[in-house]
Image (cartoon, rainbow, N blue to C red; front, side, top):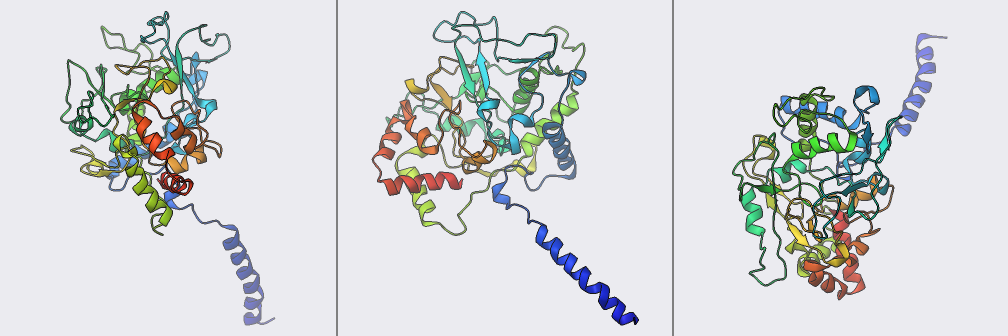
Length: 401
Protein backbone atom coordinates (compact mmCIF):
# COMPACT_ATOMS: atom_id res chain seq x y z
CA UNK A 1 0.00 0.00 0.00
CA UNK A 2 1.42 3.40 -0.97
CA UNK A 3 1.97 6.20 1.52
CA UNK A 4 -0.91 8.23 0.10
CA UNK A 5 -3.30 5.27 0.17
CA UNK A 6 -2.17 4.42 3.72
CA UNK A 7 -2.90 7.99 4.87
CA UNK A 8 -6.35 7.95 3.30
CA UNK A 9 -6.98 4.55 4.92
CA UNK A 10 -6.52 6.05 8.42
CA UNK A 11 -7.99 9.46 7.61
CA UNK A 12 -11.56 8.25 7.08
CA UNK A 13 -11.87 6.54 10.51
CA UNK A 14 -10.24 9.54 12.19
CA UNK A 15 -12.74 11.93 10.64
CA UNK A 16 -15.60 9.64 11.62
CA UNK A 17 -14.32 9.49 15.20
CA UNK A 18 -14.02 13.28 15.32
CA UNK A 19 -17.55 13.67 14.02
CA UNK A 20 -18.89 11.25 16.62
CA UNK A 21 -17.11 13.19 19.40
CA UNK A 22 -18.69 16.41 18.24
CA UNK A 23 -22.06 14.68 18.29
CA UNK A 24 -21.53 13.40 21.84
CA UNK A 25 -20.19 16.68 23.23
CA UNK A 26 -22.96 18.92 24.54
CA UNK A 27 -22.93 22.67 24.41
CA UNK A 28 -22.67 24.48 27.78
CA UNK A 29 -25.99 25.69 29.18
CA UNK A 30 -26.88 29.28 28.28
CA UNK A 31 -25.58 31.83 30.75
CA UNK A 32 -29.07 33.09 31.57
CA UNK A 33 -30.06 29.63 32.83
CA UNK A 34 -27.37 29.59 35.55
CA UNK A 35 -27.31 31.32 38.92
CA UNK A 36 -23.70 30.59 39.78
CA UNK A 37 -20.68 32.39 38.35
CA UNK A 38 -18.81 35.58 39.27
CA UNK A 39 -19.72 39.17 38.49
CA UNK A 40 -17.76 40.78 35.70
CA UNK A 41 -14.86 43.10 36.48
CA UNK A 42 -13.30 41.39 39.50
CA UNK A 43 -9.60 41.88 40.11
CA UNK A 44 -7.23 38.92 39.95
CA UNK A 45 -7.12 38.80 43.74
CA UNK A 46 -10.92 38.94 44.02
CA UNK A 47 -11.30 36.20 41.41
CA UNK A 48 -8.92 34.00 43.39
CA UNK A 49 -10.87 34.55 46.57
CA UNK A 50 -14.12 33.80 44.72
CA UNK A 51 -12.71 30.45 43.55
CA UNK A 52 -11.48 29.55 47.05
CA UNK A 53 -14.88 30.44 48.47
CA UNK A 54 -16.58 28.40 45.75
CA UNK A 55 -14.66 25.31 46.84
CA UNK A 56 -15.38 25.94 50.54
CA UNK A 57 -19.07 26.56 49.89
CA UNK A 58 -19.88 23.88 47.33
CA UNK A 59 -17.28 21.14 47.77
CA UNK A 60 -16.34 21.00 51.45
CA UNK A 61 -18.31 18.45 53.48
CA UNK A 62 -17.73 18.62 57.22
CA UNK A 63 -17.31 15.48 59.30
CA UNK A 64 -16.84 14.90 63.01
CA UNK A 65 -13.09 15.03 62.38
CA UNK A 66 -13.26 18.47 60.77
CA UNK A 67 -15.69 20.11 63.18
CA UNK A 68 -19.22 19.01 62.30
CA UNK A 69 -21.71 19.12 65.15
CA UNK A 70 -22.19 17.52 67.56
CA UNK A 71 -25.63 18.96 66.70
CA UNK A 72 -26.29 20.27 63.21
CA UNK A 73 -28.76 20.70 60.36
CA UNK A 74 -26.51 19.93 57.39
CA UNK A 75 -22.87 19.05 56.77
CA UNK A 76 -22.11 21.51 53.96
CA UNK A 77 -23.13 24.92 52.69
CA UNK A 78 -23.97 23.80 49.18
CA UNK A 79 -26.32 21.04 50.30
CA UNK A 80 -28.96 23.66 51.13
CA UNK A 81 -28.31 25.88 48.08
CA UNK A 82 -27.95 23.59 45.06
CA UNK A 83 -26.55 25.58 42.16
CA UNK A 84 -26.85 28.65 44.43
CA UNK A 85 -30.63 28.42 44.08
CA UNK A 86 -33.52 28.15 46.51
CA UNK A 87 -33.73 25.28 48.96
CA UNK A 88 -36.21 22.41 49.12
CA UNK A 89 -38.55 21.33 51.95
CA UNK A 90 -35.96 18.69 52.87
CA UNK A 91 -33.47 21.48 53.64
CA UNK A 92 -35.94 23.85 55.33
CA UNK A 93 -34.77 25.28 58.66
CA UNK A 94 -36.87 25.48 61.83
CA UNK A 95 -36.47 28.68 63.85
CA UNK A 96 -37.80 29.03 67.41
CA UNK A 97 -37.04 30.36 70.86
CA UNK A 98 -37.16 34.08 70.16
CA UNK A 99 -39.08 36.72 72.08
CA UNK A 100 -42.42 37.18 70.33
CA UNK A 101 -45.78 38.82 70.73
CA UNK A 102 -47.39 35.60 71.98
CA UNK A 103 -45.16 35.30 75.06
CA UNK A 104 -43.30 32.20 73.92
CA UNK A 105 -42.33 30.40 77.18
CA UNK A 106 -39.07 29.13 75.67
CA UNK A 107 -37.81 32.59 74.69
CA UNK A 108 -34.13 32.92 75.52
CA UNK A 109 -33.82 29.32 76.73
CA UNK A 110 -33.35 27.51 73.45
CA UNK A 111 -32.95 28.26 69.77
CA UNK A 112 -32.74 30.14 67.60
CA UNK A 113 -32.61 27.15 65.25
CA UNK A 114 -33.55 23.52 65.64
CA UNK A 115 -30.53 21.27 65.10
CA UNK A 116 -32.35 18.04 64.34
CA UNK A 117 -29.33 15.93 63.40
CA UNK A 118 -26.54 14.72 65.68
CA UNK A 119 -23.29 12.79 65.65
CA UNK A 120 -23.35 9.27 67.13
CA UNK A 121 -23.58 9.44 70.90
CA UNK A 122 -25.48 12.73 70.93
CA UNK A 123 -29.22 13.35 70.95
CA UNK A 124 -30.59 15.66 68.25
CA UNK A 125 -32.79 18.54 69.33
CA UNK A 126 -36.54 18.00 69.39
CA UNK A 127 -38.91 20.93 69.09
CA UNK A 128 -40.57 21.44 72.49
CA UNK A 129 -44.32 20.85 72.46
CA UNK A 130 -46.33 24.00 71.85
CA UNK A 131 -43.33 26.23 71.21
CA UNK A 132 -43.79 29.00 68.66
CA UNK A 133 -41.68 28.27 65.60
CA UNK A 134 -41.31 29.01 61.92
CA UNK A 135 -39.88 27.15 58.95
CA UNK A 136 -37.52 28.96 56.58
CA UNK A 137 -36.70 27.57 53.14
CA UNK A 138 -33.10 28.49 52.18
CA UNK A 139 -33.05 31.41 49.72
CA UNK A 140 -31.08 31.71 46.49
CA UNK A 141 -27.60 33.19 46.90
CA UNK A 142 -27.37 35.05 43.64
CA UNK A 143 -26.60 38.78 43.37
CA UNK A 144 -26.14 39.21 47.13
CA UNK A 145 -23.17 41.54 46.77
CA UNK A 146 -25.31 44.03 44.89
CA UNK A 147 -27.97 43.98 47.60
CA UNK A 148 -25.25 44.46 50.20
CA UNK A 149 -23.96 47.54 48.39
CA UNK A 150 -27.29 49.40 48.22
CA UNK A 151 -26.95 52.41 50.55
CA UNK A 152 -29.07 52.68 53.67
CA UNK A 153 -30.39 56.01 52.40
CA UNK A 154 -31.97 54.29 49.41
CA UNK A 155 -33.89 51.92 51.67
CA UNK A 156 -34.93 54.68 54.07
CA UNK A 157 -36.27 56.68 51.10
CA UNK A 158 -38.57 53.74 50.26
CA UNK A 159 -39.71 53.21 53.85
CA UNK A 160 -43.10 54.57 54.88
CA UNK A 161 -43.78 53.01 58.29
CA UNK A 162 -46.82 55.21 58.98
CA UNK A 163 -48.23 55.04 55.44
CA UNK A 164 -48.13 58.80 55.05
CA UNK A 165 -48.97 58.57 51.35
CA UNK A 166 -52.08 56.50 52.06
CA UNK A 167 -51.37 53.74 49.55
CA UNK A 168 -51.69 50.96 52.12
CA UNK A 169 -47.98 50.11 51.93
CA UNK A 170 -45.92 50.80 55.05
CA UNK A 171 -42.55 49.13 54.60
CA UNK A 172 -39.94 49.67 57.29
CA UNK A 173 -36.40 48.50 58.02
CA UNK A 174 -35.63 45.80 60.56
CA UNK A 175 -33.45 47.62 63.08
CA UNK A 176 -31.08 45.06 64.59
CA UNK A 177 -28.11 44.91 66.95
CA UNK A 178 -25.02 44.42 64.81
CA UNK A 179 -22.41 41.86 65.95
CA UNK A 180 -19.11 43.42 66.94
CA UNK A 181 -17.23 41.65 64.15
CA UNK A 182 -19.30 43.26 61.39
CA UNK A 183 -17.79 46.01 59.26
CA UNK A 184 -20.31 48.83 58.92
CA UNK A 185 -21.08 49.66 55.31
CA UNK A 186 -20.29 53.12 53.92
CA UNK A 187 -22.80 55.78 55.01
CA UNK A 188 -24.56 53.43 57.44
CA UNK A 189 -27.51 55.11 59.15
CA UNK A 190 -27.90 53.88 62.75
CA UNK A 191 -30.93 54.54 64.89
CA UNK A 192 -30.73 54.26 68.66
CA UNK A 193 -27.60 52.15 68.33
CA UNK A 194 -29.16 49.71 65.88
CA UNK A 195 -28.61 49.22 62.15
CA UNK A 196 -30.65 48.14 59.14
CA UNK A 197 -30.71 44.38 58.56
CA UNK A 198 -31.20 43.25 54.98
CA UNK A 199 -30.50 39.50 54.72
CA UNK A 200 -32.69 36.58 55.78
CA UNK A 201 -36.44 36.07 55.64
CA UNK A 202 -37.03 38.79 58.21
CA UNK A 203 -33.91 40.86 57.40
CA UNK A 204 -32.31 39.87 60.70
CA UNK A 205 -28.73 39.62 59.35
CA UNK A 206 -26.74 42.81 58.84
CA UNK A 207 -24.32 41.68 56.15
CA UNK A 208 -22.98 38.57 54.46
CA UNK A 209 -20.39 37.95 57.18
CA UNK A 210 -23.14 38.00 59.79
CA UNK A 211 -25.21 35.60 57.66
CA UNK A 212 -22.28 33.27 56.95
CA UNK A 213 -20.93 33.12 60.50
CA UNK A 214 -24.41 32.33 61.81
CA UNK A 215 -24.79 29.54 59.24
CA UNK A 216 -21.51 27.88 60.26
CA UNK A 217 -22.65 28.05 63.88
CA UNK A 218 -26.32 27.10 63.59
CA UNK A 219 -26.47 25.01 60.40
CA UNK A 220 -23.34 22.92 60.86
CA UNK A 221 -22.31 23.37 64.48
CA UNK A 222 -18.86 24.49 63.33
CA UNK A 223 -16.96 26.75 65.71
CA UNK A 224 -15.55 29.96 64.25
CA UNK A 225 -13.89 33.08 65.58
CA UNK A 226 -16.96 35.15 64.76
CA UNK A 227 -19.86 33.44 66.52
CA UNK A 228 -18.15 31.42 69.26
CA UNK A 229 -15.84 33.89 71.00
CA UNK A 230 -15.59 34.46 74.72
CA UNK A 231 -17.43 37.79 75.17
CA UNK A 232 -14.73 39.04 77.54
CA UNK A 233 -11.50 37.88 75.91
CA UNK A 234 -12.80 37.54 72.29
CA UNK A 235 -10.81 34.31 72.07
CA UNK A 236 -11.91 30.97 70.68
CA UNK A 237 -10.45 27.95 72.40
CA UNK A 238 -10.66 25.60 69.44
CA UNK A 239 -11.86 27.17 66.17
CA UNK A 240 -12.85 24.54 63.61
CA UNK A 241 -12.90 26.78 60.54
CA UNK A 242 -10.32 29.45 59.81
CA UNK A 243 -11.12 33.14 59.60
CA UNK A 244 -9.75 33.13 56.07
CA UNK A 245 -12.09 30.37 54.95
CA UNK A 246 -15.11 32.17 56.39
CA UNK A 247 -14.04 35.35 54.61
CA UNK A 248 -13.54 33.40 51.37
CA UNK A 249 -17.11 32.11 51.59
CA UNK A 250 -18.32 35.66 52.25
CA UNK A 251 -16.43 36.81 49.16
CA UNK A 252 -17.93 33.99 47.10
CA UNK A 253 -21.44 35.07 48.09
CA UNK A 254 -20.64 38.73 47.55
CA UNK A 255 -19.13 38.18 44.10
CA UNK A 256 -21.86 35.91 42.70
CA UNK A 257 -23.43 37.44 39.60
CA UNK A 258 -26.97 38.72 39.37
CA UNK A 259 -29.45 36.54 37.43
CA UNK A 260 -30.02 37.40 33.80
CA UNK A 261 -33.60 37.85 32.57
CA UNK A 262 -34.72 35.40 29.93
CA UNK A 263 -36.98 35.81 26.93
CA UNK A 264 -36.32 39.54 26.58
CA UNK A 265 -34.18 39.27 23.43
CA UNK A 266 -37.18 37.99 21.54
CA UNK A 267 -39.22 40.83 23.08
CA UNK A 268 -41.90 38.35 24.07
CA UNK A 269 -45.26 40.07 23.82
CA UNK A 270 -46.49 38.18 26.88
CA UNK A 271 -43.45 39.10 29.01
CA UNK A 272 -43.59 42.77 28.05
CA UNK A 273 -47.32 42.93 28.72
CA UNK A 274 -46.81 41.13 32.03
CA UNK A 275 -44.18 43.65 33.09
CA UNK A 276 -46.66 46.48 32.56
CA UNK A 277 -49.34 44.59 34.49
CA UNK A 278 -46.88 43.97 37.34
CA UNK A 279 -46.59 47.71 37.83
CA UNK A 280 -50.24 48.38 37.09
CA UNK A 281 -51.60 46.13 39.86
CA UNK A 282 -49.11 47.55 42.36
CA UNK A 283 -46.64 44.68 42.83
CA UNK A 284 -43.78 47.12 42.32
CA UNK A 285 -44.77 49.04 45.47
CA UNK A 286 -42.88 46.45 47.52
CA UNK A 287 -41.02 44.53 44.82
CA UNK A 288 -39.23 47.70 43.72
CA UNK A 289 -38.04 47.00 40.16
CA UNK A 290 -34.68 48.73 40.48
CA UNK A 291 -32.32 49.86 43.23
CA UNK A 292 -28.80 51.15 42.76
CA UNK A 293 -25.58 50.41 44.57
CA UNK A 294 -23.47 53.18 46.04
CA UNK A 295 -19.80 53.32 46.94
CA UNK A 296 -18.18 49.94 47.45
CA UNK A 297 -14.63 48.72 48.08
CA UNK A 298 -15.38 46.27 45.25
CA UNK A 299 -15.32 48.35 42.06
CA UNK A 300 -17.35 45.72 40.18
CA UNK A 301 -20.25 46.32 42.60
CA UNK A 302 -20.11 50.12 42.86
CA UNK A 303 -22.71 52.40 41.27
CA UNK A 304 -24.59 49.61 39.48
CA UNK A 305 -28.32 49.13 38.79
CA UNK A 306 -29.89 46.34 40.83
CA UNK A 307 -33.01 44.93 39.17
CA UNK A 308 -33.80 42.61 42.05
CA UNK A 309 -37.47 43.54 42.55
CA UNK A 310 -37.22 44.15 46.29
CA UNK A 311 -37.09 47.08 48.68
CA UNK A 312 -35.36 44.95 51.39
CA UNK A 313 -37.94 46.27 53.87
CA UNK A 314 -40.37 44.54 56.22
CA UNK A 315 -44.05 44.43 55.28
CA UNK A 316 -47.04 43.11 57.20
CA UNK A 317 -48.35 40.25 55.06
CA UNK A 318 -51.51 39.59 57.03
CA UNK A 319 -52.78 36.81 59.30
CA UNK A 320 -52.33 34.08 56.71
CA UNK A 321 -48.54 34.52 56.84
CA UNK A 322 -48.33 35.30 60.56
CA UNK A 323 -46.12 32.60 62.04
CA UNK A 324 -45.93 33.99 65.58
CA UNK A 325 -42.16 34.36 65.31
CA UNK A 326 -39.95 37.44 65.48
CA UNK A 327 -36.37 38.30 64.57
CA UNK A 328 -34.92 41.65 65.56
CA UNK A 329 -37.75 44.17 65.45
CA UNK A 330 -39.71 42.15 62.86
CA UNK A 331 -43.19 41.25 64.06
CA UNK A 332 -44.76 37.81 63.41
CA UNK A 333 -46.63 38.84 60.24
CA UNK A 334 -43.77 40.94 58.85
CA UNK A 335 -41.45 39.63 56.16
CA UNK A 336 -38.67 41.21 54.14
CA UNK A 337 -39.68 41.62 50.51
CA UNK A 338 -37.92 38.70 48.80
CA UNK A 339 -35.98 39.55 45.62
CA UNK A 340 -37.71 38.18 42.54
CA UNK A 341 -34.70 37.99 40.24
CA UNK A 342 -33.98 34.35 39.42
CA UNK A 343 -37.55 33.33 40.31
CA UNK A 344 -38.08 31.50 37.01
CA UNK A 345 -35.02 29.32 37.69
CA UNK A 346 -36.19 28.22 41.15
CA UNK A 347 -37.45 24.78 40.03
CA UNK A 348 -33.91 23.95 38.87
CA UNK A 349 -32.78 23.71 42.51
CA UNK A 350 -36.12 22.63 43.97
CA UNK A 351 -36.52 19.28 42.27
CA UNK A 352 -38.41 20.55 39.25
CA UNK A 353 -41.22 22.24 41.20
CA UNK A 354 -41.82 25.52 42.97
CA UNK A 355 -41.70 25.80 46.77
CA UNK A 356 -42.30 29.51 47.39
CA UNK A 357 -42.97 31.90 50.29
CA UNK A 358 -40.88 31.75 53.46
CA UNK A 359 -41.61 28.10 54.19
CA UNK A 360 -42.15 26.67 50.71
CA UNK A 361 -45.90 26.25 51.16
CA UNK A 362 -46.80 27.75 47.76
CA UNK A 363 -46.32 25.24 44.96
CA UNK A 364 -46.70 27.79 42.15
CA UNK A 365 -46.31 31.48 41.50
CA UNK A 366 -50.08 31.78 41.32
CA UNK A 367 -50.45 30.12 44.74
CA UNK A 368 -47.87 32.50 46.22
CA UNK A 369 -49.77 35.51 44.90
CA UNK A 370 -53.04 34.15 46.33
CA UNK A 371 -51.52 33.99 49.82
CA UNK A 372 -50.42 37.62 49.84
CA UNK A 373 -52.39 39.56 52.44
CA UNK A 374 -51.94 42.53 54.71
CA UNK A 375 -50.21 45.34 52.82
CA UNK A 376 -50.32 43.23 49.64
CA UNK A 377 -54.10 42.74 49.73
CA UNK A 378 -54.80 45.52 47.23
CA UNK A 379 -52.29 44.20 44.70
CA UNK A 380 -53.57 40.65 45.13
CA UNK A 381 -57.16 41.77 44.57
CA UNK A 382 -56.22 43.73 41.46
CA UNK A 383 -54.42 40.65 40.14
CA UNK A 384 -57.55 38.59 40.82
CA UNK A 385 -59.58 41.02 38.71
CA UNK A 386 -57.31 40.59 35.68
CA UNK A 387 -58.50 38.33 32.89
CA UNK A 388 -57.07 34.82 32.75
CA UNK A 389 -54.91 35.87 29.77
CA UNK A 390 -53.54 38.88 31.66
CA UNK A 391 -52.77 36.77 34.70
CA UNK A 392 -50.76 34.40 32.49
CA UNK A 393 -48.85 37.37 31.07
CA UNK A 394 -47.95 38.62 34.53
CA UNK A 395 -46.78 35.14 35.56
CA UNK A 396 -44.81 34.81 32.29
CA UNK A 397 -43.03 38.04 33.20
CA UNK A 398 -42.17 36.73 36.67
CA UNK A 399 -40.85 33.49 35.19
CA UNK A 400 -38.61 35.50 32.87
CA UNK A 401 -36.77 37.13 35.78
